[in-house]
Length: 426
View 1: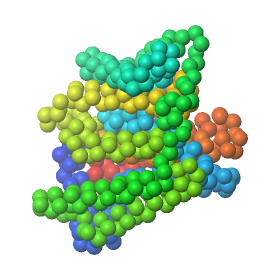
View 2: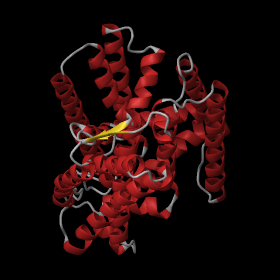
View 3: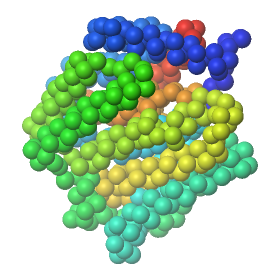
């Protein structure tokens, strides 16, 4: 799965020059007209196929509106709190899928790896009486080792990621069944920190507002710091008015969300950890050399190699992170369920994780996407699941609708990619 298709006569250098020219034009609009210029720059990017999260945001609004009209309980604080608790496990797995998709590759075994991690945790913690921290570390290291194996097989022997992960799907499903043993189900004590983390620990109201304040202040500080760096480098930057407006809008949205969820149980610790992971990986992708290398390899692996990037190391590191996050997602799922069983990581786990990453805006062709894709994509997936459950519809309806939404997301991605190529954004 690569993205080397280009228009005749077009080169990577041409793409970069066109992209830089258009970005400078956007920056000029922002600099000269402040907020109004930012809006016009956004409209101009949409016209050139750079849709960003716009389609999925519209999709969330439509999905929520339809389900709310069919069942008024859907947007209740209680159901939305349950939604945040339910999407955390799949969201963590989807975060790993985002990373591997950025390289234009795929990992089909994340479900089996998550189930194996849940089984390791349950056996060590419950059956063997091992300290829970050690059990968690062992389960996650198993995921890391699996990712390392994938990376070596891909880089040293050229085994396609589709094939190696498909083999892993089957092998680690069998390993999970072997670890669980003949009983097939291991219940985790309700009083344990594992189950409390997945079901019972919620932030006090005051602490949830404090978290929002800290995040908003961090966002504002990041924007100011970035603006100062660009100004010192002689580049255009956001105006103070634009930063204030964006920060105020973000603060307002987050405060409304937290206030509404606090009408019920509030913000759970598990979804908060998931969101923090999303922010962490978004920072790594956008603010570090490793993250820029990931985008470069996904965009054009040969150009990345010629520019001095150690491509093999990037592939290995991403496969390791993907499997580690899959293992962590399995631990989240075991904590939420309060058990590990033969169904852990099976059924639609792979479907939901991969669909969430793609629906959230990560391109199947590599080089485009963000960690936030996992967050907004899993909101779509789990909203569909929650809404159909409230309507008492059979599971096959959920599969059909999820598949249709996934197909629509891929079509939008393909069309926007063609539009970017036609407009010169590459």
